[in-house]
Image (cartoon, rainbow, N blue to C red):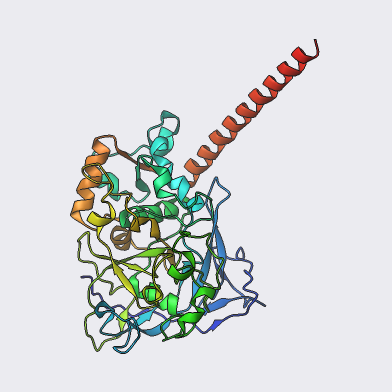
Length: 422
């Protein structure tokens, strides 16, 4: 368990309006921070300016991720004994403090995840070796390189994983927590920023958005359909395009329902403490594969399981039961429940230290590390460096291939036209 108490600076009050318009984010060097108070839209006041909503552009693609500023503050985590639908692992309630951070407005989508999915062939291509080559032969050294990530082979049965839809704006599903960690490392490297999974306390704090009720909008689950895709309105339909339901007070969509979301922490009963704990430091990390915490409920969850305090413990053996390989994939899950599990990322106000990078981006446990090492040594995965330059090179190759294909089509059409004119 990681229990390091650290005093975190708190931000000023959050301001919001219904327009939720982004502010100019190019005025100073740090993305999502502006020096002057925005005239409209949401913002969070900090010492050096104002945190505002902004878009993360994935280099070489048309994909962007909206990030919403979350104010610093304190809250009570967990549910009271008399809350309807409560389970034992939601207590005892504890008080937490968090520094401000950004959180992705919606769950990470298939379009946003796909460039990472496609890295296996990129890492094995001689064309990109000048970008992806690693200096060391030692796997641990390579895995811990700050701009290196691992990539799985392509999905064996993509139609199973994405049965409910493959559109770019559908939530990404069936990824393991390790794959989510590596995705956050990849996104950090190609954007030169710091992304990671939220700690469990950060997730619940952002979900509640200042509330202490069953749901961020109140206690009445009859209103849940306005904010969530869950069993009553989506059990037979599967996950839905992100961002269609109402957002919470801090601009976050689908915190209740649609797909459940990985967080960083081990899922254990909360420890009683008289101290106010630090959301960025006092997370629970015991170095085991399971159970990790999954939050928010999904399209297949009843209303009770979508509450702000509800927790789902992971079970990788069960969630990968359809995977025929040994060792089972450290990147992909294969089961019915896995198709209801996705991810959402945060970006802390301060960049991750090297120690924090190892904690949030690493495998998290020895079993996963060994499985990744074995699969890569057998050619069932790959590892390499990533960068903005690599993403642009990939995009350039795709553009060349598209142009070549279009030229062939035009040539074939011209040949047919000439033949018909004879």
